[in-house]
Amino acid sequence: MTPETLKILTESAKYDVSCSSSGSQRANIKGGIGNAAPAGICHSFTPDGRCISLLKILLSNDCIYSCRYCPNRAEANVPRATATADEICNLVIGFYKRNYIEGLFLSSAVVKSPHYTMVQLLSVVKKLRTEYGFHGYIHLKGIPHAEQDLIFEAGKWVDRMSYNIELPSENSLKLLAPQKTKRSLLEPMHDLHYKKLYLKENKSKEKFLPAGQTTQMIVGATPETDGKILRLTQALYRNYGLKRVYYSSYVPVVQDSLLPDKCTGLLREHRLYQADWLLRFYGFDVDELLPSEGNLSEEYDPKCAWAIRHPELFPVEVNTAPYEMLLRIPGVGVKSAYRILSARKYTRLTMDDLVRMKVVTKRARHFITCDGKFFGTDDESRRRNLLLLADKEENAAKAEQLSLFSDAPTAFSALTGEV
View 1: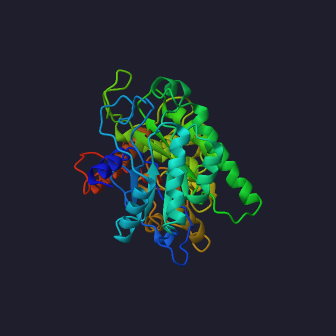
View 2: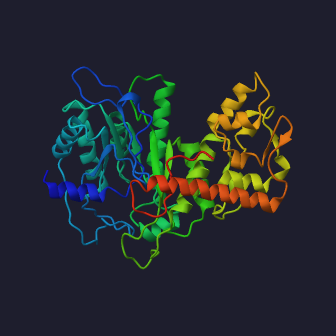
């Protein structure tokens, strides 16, 4: 593969953020190379949340589709390149041996037809496993409209697959990605999920998507609200067993009359990740976070906004509250909630104890009592201002940390969501 081809195919792949590599247990075998088990995979993230421990590349950017937001769309005047299966395989092995990467994220534009493209992608991953002896992590981007047997075959050889929804509604897909349909994206997710469940129920030893599925949605390119996006997210987690939904703030990388001419901004993306975290780990339902089809608060994180709307539930006594309620206290995360449960078996907890447990007391003190003592303020206006200040301080600290890797003056971490 020439340096120019490599540059084109890696540059074309950089817009996909759904390439996290956690969750695989694929181990090496005698005579092979690479290891996707937890001890063998390393993560490194760019400020916008993209994983850079993987070789992230397209097989081809010569697309027949006309997605209006995509820089590789058929009508775009950009350099085109297509790699062969052996070129990709040799690149992966060479980079791995040099310790540049720990795995592969492979995607492609739709070349000639979905069937043809999926056959080429399958050829790459199959060769890596069988001919090149690579047992490291592989994440494969699925091609909409490809045949089911190709999708299932790919699931045997890779650790994770993703079908990116991109746009959160059928209407937006028709407008901006006319060759894609809601069914062409959701149906393979459904099939892969139930294939995995079937193998598990029948106690099959076959490795099939050990790291599951992910997807990505563009935020702000179309008028869908956070409520619409999060309701779709919740359905994907509950009905398709997805590991992660990634959100990508819209950036105008192409000019089009149907697209906004301004960036959405990272704050909205940041709030969606926080809400997503609450749905997955804190027992919240989307209707609790957003009773209507509006957007999340820009002033407060989603858990704090929920707590402010429910003053009848607070303050909570940390020495007696059940685990489910501890999780709903602003400033108390999953780990600190477990620490509280463990420690209070032996002593009555004080505010100093919570500080040592890494509870964010700047937030939590307005919603809790410790052994009957309240350390917050009863003044609603003052409490809101203090919470707003705490949120700004945390985001400013994250932006300062991220600036080590980026010249961007403001950035928000979207990698975690503990609130």
